[in-house]
Length: 247
Image 1 (cartoon, rainbow, N blue to C red):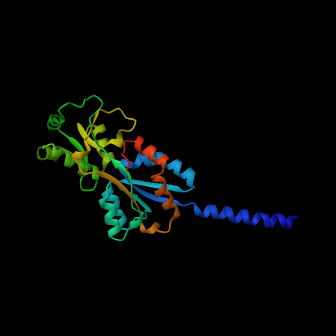
Image 2 (tube, helix red, strand yellow):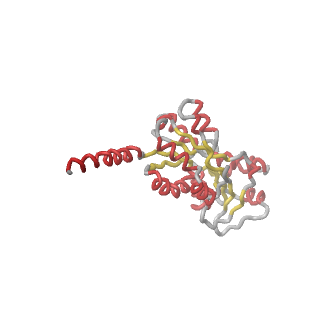
Image 3 (cartoon, rainbow, N blue to C red):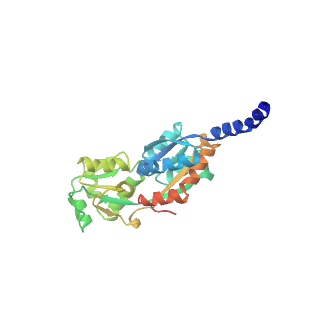
């Protein structure tokens, strides 16, 4: 009887070890605008998959540079399409893993005590300091410059721009009083009551946010599970609730 029980337990032990071996810890580099959304998605994904996420947030340009220098990330959740395409072309990422996970929207925001005026152009021209993300490294900052140019105020406002490291930093500049108005990701206003103006999408290039699996995770089933999860219905519902569009 004892021998029979031992033989019966062997498959269970092997199965258990197999399940543990399948669970992975994934290092995710995420654009700053999507950090809070990913933090809300994280416990759902981890509960469903058994995998664990280690999250590093920053501007897409800075994260991309870190990846090219060997930073040990498994997945990049970028705020644009250009950096993932660049990483694929340079051999740092897997082309067949590329996926659009969100469509970003840009908003002009003011402090609680300051209302958005009907004449947005005049409000921008009157402001002494305007916060945007650094356009060289952050797609939302580049979009903000496009909006200013479309409104015909880019040159006049350029000396008054306060450049933040990323989209979250632009919001922090406004909240700290370093700027009077600022362009931020609409997702940054999730559950916030700040007065804002939703920038018409046709005033700047589309903010298609793409994810890609990096080479070091090429054989990772966990990375594939995360990519599939990002376009699942539960994830899409949360992403949309944070102010993003969906494809």
